[in-house]
Length: 285
Image (tube, rainbow, N blue to C red):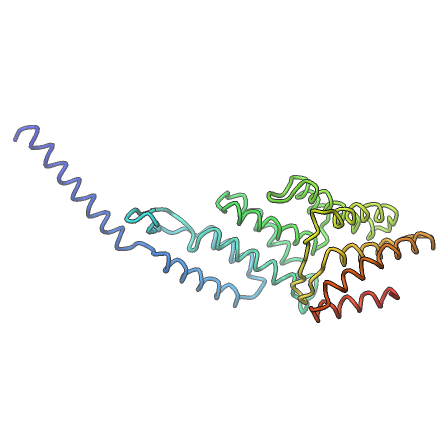
């Protein structure tokens, strides 16, 4: 048998093997529908599990990898990999959901909730460190981590995160949020003048043009805060912290027109309006 014939036979065998391999991979491929169904089943299982299991379950989802064959949109190409049971972005969304659920957990003892949030903060740092999330998922999870630090009162951790910068957030936003956190820390340690100083930095940013469309919803009760409401609330904090009557009166006067504007924005939202009116009444307004 001459060399040319031998080469031809080898090529035919290789082509046959390749074709067979491709047919096999195609037969075990995961379609987008199958990926969605798997993610749906994992979400259902995750939501039914006790919150104490949240971080361990997420870690397991991240670390357990399987041989996967996915059909790409650019048919008939396949993507072969060694990946988690569900896509990384889906794991990121589950992590965010866990943060939100814990933020709204008013039944569990605070010590338990704080511990669970701390576990999620640690886990999310691990997930982000894998560098597998899309940019959108990464940015969104960073926001939830920041909320988590705030919820457990770890202001130093939150400040450290902000000083590194958060993608999608301007330096001005980060600076104002740092001021807010430092104000809370100062209030807890009885440093009233420092707290007022930091609160005023935060208020100035809230009332700047870039925040004119700001709204923030509290997942625990559904209350929607306008920027005027947030600014007024913090002016009243300054009034409460102020040591002299003149300072208290000045901050209160600054809060009044902002509360009026907040009432107008909340007039069609019964839940928010009732909470706003309750707050104003507590300040004698």
